[in-house]
Amino acid sequence: MKDNGHHVLDARGVVLGRLAVTVARLLRGKHKASYAPNAAPHNAVTVLNCEHVRISGSKAVGKVYYRHSGYPGGLRRTKLHDLMLRSPATVLRAAVRGMLPRNRLRDGFMSMLRVHANEGAVCR
Image (cartoon, rainbow, N blue to C red; front, side, top):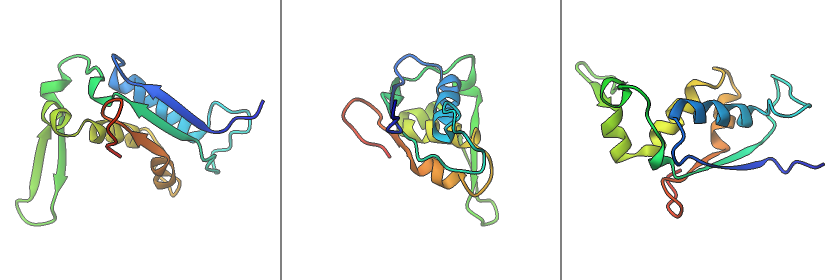
């Protein structure tokens, strides 16, 4: 059976971390018998309805994302709840990115991920 390498997942009602694990495994190609850790298999993954993903526990108000502008006093904090309202695709992409290996292949894996906030809109 020939695998075309494109997977479509529905995130409605799925816990964020469990979805990110599944997406990371598909992007790396660990579901194939021809898996090699040093090769990028070019598996495309499309996630639909990421705005309806579930957040378990008290992470919605407790989890904080940090970024720094590079200037003194430039530390910015964003709570998970606020980021889900503004850009749910960013939350999913950050979760998947954290589950991929930190090497040269990670940017290639992330470029094969497409995220849609709902059925029709493209968030990239």
